[in-house]
Length: 220
Length: 220
DNA sequence: TTTAAAATAGAACAATTGTTCTTCTGTTAT
DNA sequence: ATAACAGAAGAACAATTGTTCTATTTTAAA
Image (cartoon, rainbow over all chains, first blue to last red; front, side):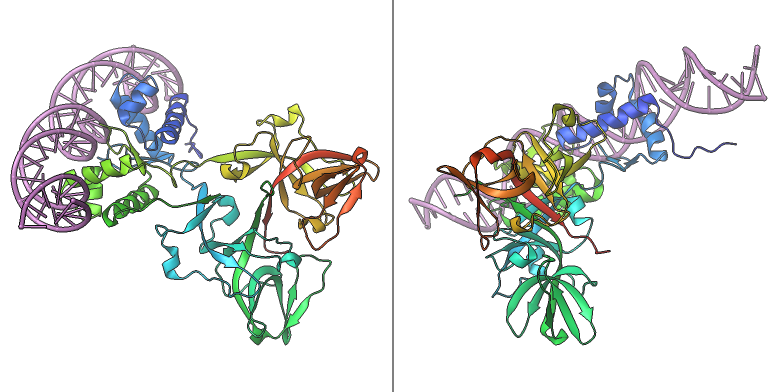
């Protein structure tokens, strides 16, 4: 007995899945059995139900019984393509780096949001955005007005770019962080520049830099 | 990119919008009036209908009459406006800057694509992406590995960042371009650095820089 | 206070819609 | 041929669900 590995979609069922996908994209909600019926030129609702049952058994869709339009496409359309990242503040040389508090995560608040494709965050949680104020991050190759995608972590691996708060200097900076014996090396992203060495007690990791987005507008 | 959240919503209607959002994310299809009723602790379906009608009039949702679960959230989760930008090559100091040829625009070809939210391109046509090779663009605050979003134009306004090919030097560079009498001023994005002046005959504008995207991965 | 508008309640109706039942048509393998 | 099975067709049923109606309460304005 040969067992089918990845179930191949018959022409009719592929048509049905495509129709559902287009319907959801177009209307914003899934189709009914009868929508599929007319949309795919099928004569009876029972035929649609038959194919839907097969599709569910094969794992292509998920159905909620007794629920109208209770069809969810699995696999492709199910994964969120866009992410709303809250812009919780700005980062400047002489100001403390904003850190997401639980209140700040209320997506219904009046906050601004940065829309990015999900591949930038790569599914990471606790991602937020900061707007760069001033040119103090030039040595991190980050300009005034740039948006920095951050992940809220307290420790980073060696070599990762992090938002660092230097307690003594009361200074915020973005540097690659290397833990070394007895000291911390802060390496500018610009490899032509020299590293800075600081006391481990003096550094506070505020977050990991995930990405930098710079939009060029027409200059004023 | 930056999107203001919705205007003032009454507590109840904010709760309803949030419920719809969570419901859709969780189940994959919109809720019924009665789902909202129980989910938001509302006593009557007519009250839900009342609020939904207000929400639609205010533009927060779209409803299809007579359609079960015919609710579509507008604004945030609704329209994932994504754009596929072809990555047509890389830009390095000593190599000619790739320009999009008509063949390169075949979206079915085996080319790589960069997915960005539509607000980055802002509806512009002829947008493509280049990957930065090497650190020669450091003075433009652009690092090795960065992705540069370009628009294929032959002329740019004063002060716009452009991909410039210097014929004599056989050199590619990204600079702010200023037309001056008898000469062209190429100003690095890093305002701390000095401009370069070149003969107008020596410059070829290959495209306008729309955005820079830098992804930080874990270092090797 | 008085009044208008907004919001809430409860119920009933009518349309939509998922499901099931039976029968029928092909195809494929034994 | 005949059995087994995927697929299709049509009808009917029952549940789900959008909508409307009227009445009442709360809120905001004059």
